[in-house]
Image (tube, rainbow, N blue to C red; front, side, top):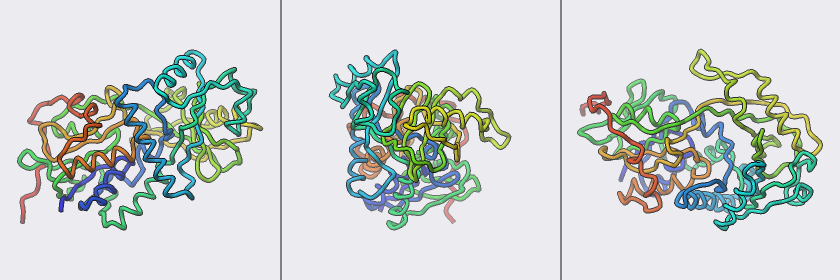
Length: 379
């Protein structure tokens, strides 16, 4: 039976781990802290393919959305995946975005502000611009809820979860990846390794002698205290992106405040709480009745972004047994990427859908003398 060690317990790592177990592999899932403690725990998780994406990426994102619809159909009672549409407005690019989407047969409608409440409840029409773009097929997911859902199956299928492993590394023996080693020195042997460490992926590969193109940058997700709000769709506006969140909450982010985030002494990040309040006030100004929203939590960290913006999915060239999953679209691709990567790991056959996203396009070899962990000799 094939054994696989997965580094990273965000959505990509856990999705792949569960699919590997379904296919009969033994799986050890190793994470620096705890599941969803990285980018998956602070993602807006807008499920969409409405941007200016190359056609192969667009098709992969559509497949990703399809997998979520299947999951929702099989679990109709869950409240952490919804497909109630998305609204977008930006006066400079709205018409061009609409035309681009229509040319791809993407579900898109330009709506006058007065018509919005009929299709998208919970908004104040007076706060909207004259026209907005409505994408009825878009949705959202709360990744921490999804990860807990998958971890239940992971445990039932006998997966081994290792939390608090610190900065773990790929172990190489005879030029082949043979497992993972935790920061404390614990060795987890495997026939193959999948690196799905979010914004930490490039550092893992650097220790193996590779330079991975990487432009990961800061993000902050704010979640409000429970409050009746009536919003169902995802909103993407010039000052706030916001979606519903389980428990009558709202989750939101944007970029205008990123220069106000500072490094903290513990290696994390800090921001004035007023920034979080200002962001939820932006959301309140769009909602019917302008409810008083209070930030309950905000999480700050790096969001993983490959150097060219496209996913990095597949085997690491020159290092048999080592695979990588690294993408900015971890939410939309979360299920489909795990499924396809698991298939490649177990069969050894590259999936044609992933051909445009191979790691070699962004990987450059470095000094081969860079230190790597070596497997401990057998007792």
